[in-house]
Length: 500
Image (tube, rainbow, N blue to C red; front, side):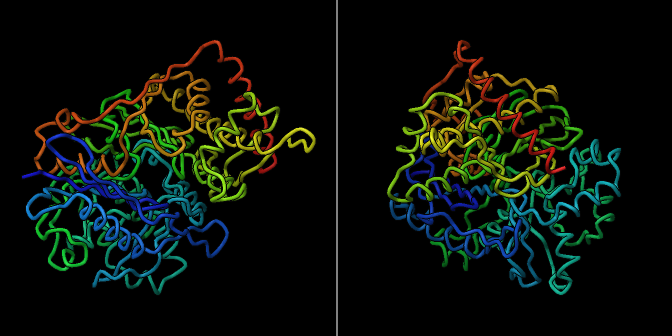
């Protein structure tokens, strides 16, 4: 009988499910729903919300699809892993009913609340204990609900992150993880416990915070009612959960100090592992608990995030014809002009405020447009160069923190499917790039195998991970790509000055 593992990746664009054969380490079926991107609602400028029931709907559809495709039989599924979009807020009442739409990761409404909490708590506490400013993270979003929607706050029984909500729908149990609490800026790294000082400062009742379980552990089992809704056999354990960026790093076997992972989906990230609690004094990059953290062997994830990444590329695609042009055609167009896009610069910060910009409303800008010289080829290239430049900006912050950035791992997906994007990333940052045949859902499935005891070690869990390609920088190109970055940075600094 096969031993199968189910990985669910709850993104803001789609929900993806993958089935992994534990004996071969290979994915045997994968599917993302919906076919088009999930809607993000913006009732006001800077807001971003999604209905958690929509995530649940697509969990059911994607799971049913791959179970049918793989012909899953009773007794074959041994564990479920859940990865999810970080920093979101889900509020439920005592009957586990959702009280309001989820305030998701790219929502900017709580910036001022986070800044006020940072001033109240003081940098002498926030930086060494929280390793971050409270910023625009989950705790600040919850405080916004308390201040602005008291009638909803009065009904709150528990608050959760998006993956905790899906786990609740499957098991009936409301739990979270240490890495999840750190993502929400609820975690005191010195006390290795909830930050009761932050809860007091923000007047958040401690009883609202779920109990934390290890990322790799049995965290409840599929109920009879959830089995009827999903087709997943009752009794199968949830045995892994993690936010999408720690999970992406895990999916690429980035577990040791000095190892790095990158993604370029709706948002773009670089995530590096450290064995010391590093922090940026300006909180432009953020430190969280990594999935393999323990008190005996600490492991921290330093996250650089650029909200305006794949969302800019998809916006351009819609602008250029939507279904009438493919991403491959766009990449070819951008690759047909020289580095630097003949002076055209794209600042990509158009998807909410950016942490690397210290939450300043910089926005997205196309700068230097010459109507007699530039066409869509230049716009495509400038957009991809602008995204990589934004990642490079954060990359250099991480280097200044003492992180060793030489080899970066990525899944062969999203914007890393673009040869132009890959080349720009490698040459602008002067790093080696390893591309793997994996994704977040497969990573969650591997995590489930460890948590359920199907794999005896991390090494065994990754025996089926396939390296597709390694790209190395050509140092002869360094000067030209450094010039692209310097021009981009100059234009950015002009914008920052105007914002201030």
